[in-house]
Length: 196
Image 1 (cartoon, rainbow, N blue to C red):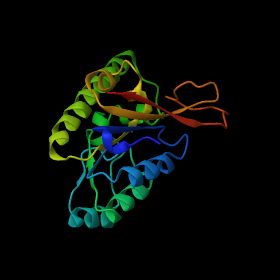
Image 2: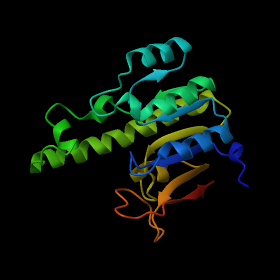
Image 3: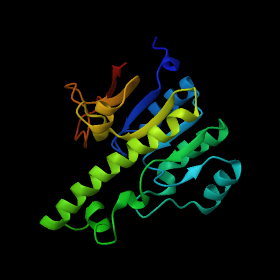
Image 4: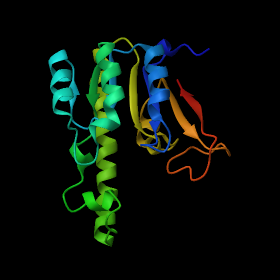
């Protein structure tokens, strides 16, 4: 049994809908009982008071790229447990009106747009790291961090810049870290990596 309280950071890799991400998130959040959950999907929304929770639940709007339904279970879990739920990304993940249809798969990207997307991904990684470093001194409990499994690759900025973490990520039947669609794979399991 892993003592989650011994870590500064607990990462949980999301597939954004390929598997039921919330199941693993709920399990870990309930075990860790954090003061803060940082979430990529919440973008720039900060739910640190009951008023903020009630306002979002009433309005039910996240952004053009994330529906309230996608984060509803997480929002309600954190509200119930009096956990501060903090967005750690840009609104619409930093993508402008021209790029949103590309991200949604409605249009193919031009070469220029591919470069823009690559640049935005790097800016997002830096924003994630800055947010984590901002909240780390504000609590003695581990911080639970929810973001795309892609950001949890061993050579990623977060994994190489931070220490004292456990990172949970989904993997396919062959044991590969899942960073895209599992295709027809039925057997998705979670592995973890520890760095002290």
